[in-house]
Each structure stands twice: as structure tokens, then as C-alpha cells.
Image: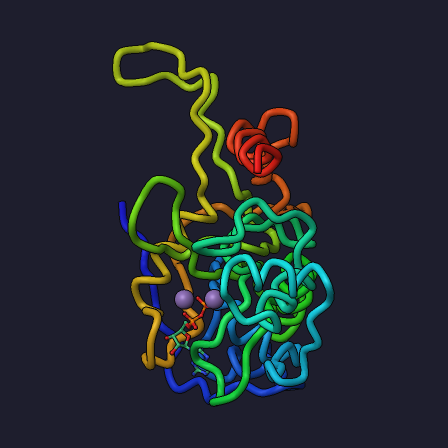
Length: 254
Ligand code: GDP
Ligand code: MN
Ligand code: MN
């Protein structure tokens, strides 16, 4: 058993309007069932999500949080603009984004973008993945999956990892429920977060700095799914989300 992770080399700096499917397909010959992993940073750049801090006008809520936390009100405003719920304000903003992903600073980032600019994450990463995936399939004539990734921290643990924030034609979860273990016992709850695992693997080649590797192709695994899939399969229903309930309690006590 084995699979490959292939860095797509020589991708240029990406700017608004760049056509990522052609940028990618000009640099690698894709094969059936390849999984194309793309850093959200270049998707956001191509979608024109870069902005200057000085162009952001903080509203009342942003000013209030800034006063409480000592942070830049314009940065808080940028985070709030992409958030539907705030769970933690300091030492970092922990929010659920409009797209439903819960992460620090709503994914607003200032690394790997020109000086003076910040980057919002793609507004609808599933839609971005579908658009890029559909176009890559059209160009290559192959059946392909796409995962858009970002780097996130983990609850309870030090250290960040690549995670999936948008997908196209890949089963994000492999259900082990009903399968047997080595000793014939039935597995009752295990659901493997395949898209996150692949994002983590690809991130080993991407790195976080000046590596210039925003696209990695995973070859030799079969998680292709003919129907459309959504990253929303990962988001726990509100009534079952114990951590969010706890964080809301803490906020209300203040
Ligand atoms: P994120 O995890 O989506 O926030 O992306 P990162 O900022 O961590 O970047 C992941 C990888 O993509 C790193 O190797 C960066 O050097 C690279 N990268 C980011 N932007 C570009 C770009 O415009 N062109 C190229 N070639 N690489 C980029
Ligand atoms: Mn990022
Ligand atoms: Mn990263």
C-alpha cells in the first residue's frame, strides 16, 4: 500500500483574476482520481480578497473589542466582517466564519501577501473548490477531487496543521461504523476525517513560509465521490457541539 504527494513546482505569485485551473494544469499532468490540494491563500488572492488595513473602518463592536483587548480595531473589524459568531476575543479571536468554519481570526492572514496587505479567506470555499475542480476536469478529461486548505491550530494542543475548508468530489469522512476491528468487535463511532488528514499530509510539502508550494497532488488513494460533497459535513450540529456551548457559557458570565 502506498500513495504519493507531489508538489506542483514553479507556480508564480498569484494575483486577482489569475486562472488557477490553467496555472495548475500547465504544470502537472493530472491522472484519474488525483486529489488536488490547494492552499486557501492562493485561492483568496485569485479571488481578489486582499485588502489594506488602513482601508478598514471599525464599527462600534470592533472598537469595543479593541478597547477591551488592546488590539487593532481595524483588524478586529476585518475578522468580524467574516464571522457569524465570536467565542473568544483574547488572546486571539476564535470565531465561526460565515462559511461555518470555526478558527482563529476567521482565517484573516497577513503572511505570504505583499507588504501592507492582508487577505480574507475565500468567502465560499466549497464553491471555489467546485469551480476549480470542474474546470480542471474539463481541461484534463480526468475525474478529480479538490481540497482547499488552510493552516489551523487545534483545541487542546500546541502546533498548527493543514485542514480542509472547502472540497469538491471527495468523501470528507470515512465511516468505520459497522466495520470490524482486528478481533471482530464492531466499530461503533469512528469516523475518519480524511479530507483533514490529506490537508495535513499536503501541508508537509507546502510549509508555512517562503516555500512557494501552494498546490500538492495526492495520487494513489481512492476517495473520489461522483456526487457533490460539502465541507459542511464536518461541522457538528449546534445542539451536539459541547465545546461551543461551554464557550457561550463563559462569554455570558462576563
Ligand atoms: P495557507 O495555509 O492557505 O494560509 O497558505 P500559506 O500562507 O501557509 O502558504 C502555503 C504555501 O503556499 C507556502 O509554501 C507559501 O510559500 C505558498 N504560497 C502562498 N502564496 C503563494 C503564491 O502566490 N505563489 C506561490 N507560488 N506560492 C505561494
Ligand atoms: Mn492561512
Ligand atoms: Mn499555511
